[in-house]
Length: 347
Image (cartoon, rainbow, N blue to C red):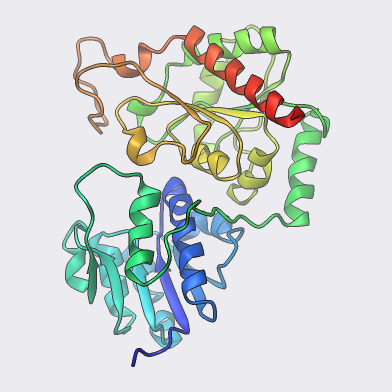
């Protein structure tokens, strides 16, 4: 007879997009083990996002560095977990699963850095390309959960978050009923970034053609990329870069008419809350990490070496997979998305 599962530890410490990708697996596990208390292990910087994910009972926030991780081991051991699910699949996350002392530890058979050695159950993954959301759901299925027809991204819609989001937008001069286009022009890798001049040209054309405010968003460290675009624009835009706490991104992006973005964390949040996305992809593969769900548009320029997943480009025409996408193509895609949204809103 199988012991009841009363306490679950979900290990998914980073990054922003990966955390969003894990949300349907959390929802499936909650359905499979409705009485269980779920703790999510996450890096401190992303904890505010996990706080607004429905179905999380406790958060184990780890600080940077080895000692920051090991410092949480006593609490994790004391929690008495019945099941540990490692969706990160790296040496550090595998070790943390083992150090909890839990006798049932589940992860991917193809996890990296030797992480499968620390699992008691290894979930096989097909070699065929699949989206990260669907790959994570394989773990829930292996634990007896039903595969959802439509994976669920359940962000809490707390009144205080809505009020804070409205306050930020109001302070920027945006009325509650006014549509606006969100833009995220940065990305963790330089090879994921569409050039500032092309972003600026697309933003100007959209401002002229649509008459809708352009709102730049991103973390504090992404201000240089935003400023590089705004300095090249001839129209005025709103800059909220560094002013939008990560925990408020679901509420803020829920209010945007559309997000125009590089391959980035906010892209996944926008898709999760149902905001249309136009995304620019260079070295990465949208089949695996594109905006999840129907109705989004991914633009890239076809070259024989993509997706290469490289952080440096060795082509004669640097980043041709991105620079080959024209502002005209981007503007056309955004206008088509906005048109579809208006039609669906009026039907």
